[in-house]
Amino acid sequence: MSFIRQAREFGYRAIPKRDPNFGANLDTSHGPVLYVEGITVSFDGFKALNDLNLYVDDGELRCIIGPNGAGKTTMMDVITGKTKPDAGTVYFGQQIDLLSLSEHQIARGGIGRKFQKPTVFEPLSVYENLELAIAGDKRVWSTLLKDLTGEQRDRIDEVLHQIGLPKHRHQLAGALSHGQKQWLEIGMLLMQSPRVLLVDEPVAGMTGEEVEHTAQLLTSLEGKHSVIVVEHDMAFVRSIARKVTVLHQGSVLAEGTMDQVQNNPKVVEVYLGE
Ligand code: ADP
Ligand code: MG
Image 1 (cartoon, rainbow, N blue to C red):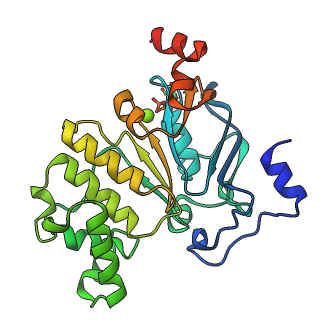
Image 2 (image 1 turned 135 degrees about the vertical axis):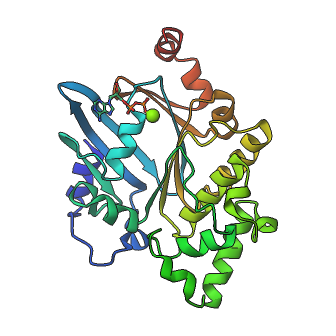
């Protein structure tokens, strides 16, 4: 039986949440924080996702790999509300039907997304970028003019340490290295204390040292947030991998430890055939 149907049998229903930050009080008593079931997305008849199932546990660090065109980005688009699927269900905890919510509501509700390109505010300092992120909406510049509460200042300090940039707090974001900008952007998402963080190809273009730091940063989030990382760099994935999901032609081809999936004949075939 599917997880969703099981959850419904236990008496859960999709209920609209009034609290915009509904992710903070999510019901995950049955384990998963995300239930993605039977998702199909067609573009002019071509199925970018084809009956995709994915269950991510609360606090889990999950890596998603798969050849180009496998549907990894489309899957993130569905979870974050950017693309509405033709079929399937997506639940956040047991009660929040994500398909009924807008992209903005989902972001406010606790699902943060890091796109490939960093979009920090270059003329502002690292600290100011984090300050702006408090508002959740990057366009709300007025937060910069307000006095921060002690709690907010503590949160910024905490995040500065998490992303490894405490010494750069007064530096302009535009003067940071590519890797540092990526960490700052992850920090801006962390300011929102997201329940789930989706990260698309975080180490593309990074130096070896930056890749290592990114691995430390992402693994340090485990237990505090659920993190879904899509990445091509296999050495990097191996260094952070717990459970790995392999997508191929819009469906899950294999799931397990890095060793299990790398030794799976179906996975070997798909990667050799690339
Ligand atoms: P991945 O991120 O795994 O490389 P994508 O999710 O970006 O794969 O794409 C999956 C497939 O869907 C690809 O074949 C891609 O060309 C196609 N696709 C993605 N977005 C669109 C779109 N907006 N219109 C048409 N085809 C798309
Ligand atoms: Mg992609």
